[in-house]
Amino acid sequence: MPMSILIVDKDPSGLKRLAGVIRNAGYPDVVSAMTLKGALEMVDKGDDVVTASNINLIIANLSSREIEEECRRFKENISFSDIPIIAIKCNKDHIPLRVAIDANITECLTDIDNEAEIMMRVRSVLSLKYEIKRRKALERSLSEMARQLEHTNQILQMISSQDGLTGVANRRYFDQFLSNEWRRAIRNSSSVSLIMIDIDFFKAYNDIYGHLQGDDCLRRVAGEIQRTLKRSSDIVARYGGEEFAVVLPATDLKGAIKIAQLIHENIIALNIRHEGSTVMDCVTVSLGVASEIPKIDSKYDSLIKKADEALYKAKRSGRNRVVCWDEAMTSESLK
Image (cartoon, rainbow, N blue to C red; front, side):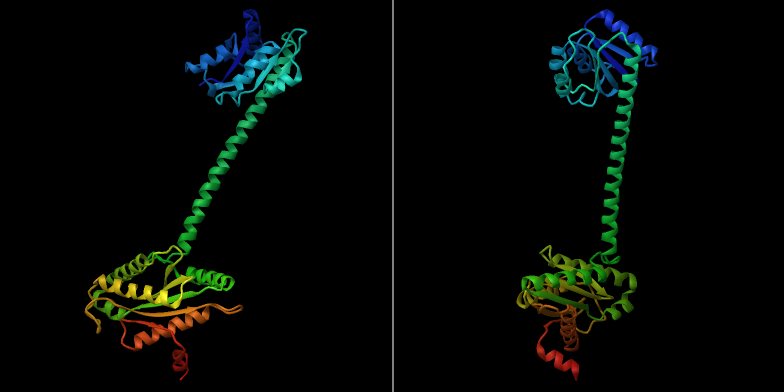
């Protein structure tokens, strides 16, 4: 599609003279109109030659009043807002600078017969337009690259924080999340609760059904734990092997026990057959629950230790149950 220079002059001889100057300077695609309004109508008709997208420059030989009224109206049309206008005034009534500025005129010339000056201004304005266009294209490209980079970073962040097998959070993200929530709880003097979960007799499950079935079991258990959690602030992470951890910010021990019991019941309701279990004929889990209101300078390791001790007691007591931590467990672990 040709890139055109639009000439506006109510004098037919002026149109012809300007067109000749422009063509002689190496710009053959010249379109003429006697008024800016007429030019606008040409564009609105969707003419194959004159469209807003292929007009590079407008050269207008108009009076001060026409410049003030028509150019401002012309520039208000979003299709033409980026097209530069050179206004030529060849009589003694020169266009006032204020009028030119208000009408968004790019350049002003005072002599239609000075071909050298006309072409110098034309080349200068076109060079500026091309540079602006190039920079805008570069900005769009950089913006798109930034958007793609952000999207890629989000994907990488998700991958780096996700367990590849089960799709829930991984151990790395668990440590980071619990550390952040621990500091938040110190600031707010609020509770943080932790549930440690272990699939009962999982080694026997793998031995009987194979590792592919074992992987599917892990995925189903992880998915059910995730579905049991209703708040976006709660997370489940694969802690290691067949063990999972649930972090419950701003949750006291009573609330954590209730969630642990729901998880326990929902895993049983999956009814995943397990002939190697000595407690039921389906997959079950043991759960240890602990809760703390962190003190200043304390570390979240203490919460993990308590939940681990509760889980150990649940397994030692026969598995397939929920046990919450109490002071007696620490004494027992020291014996």
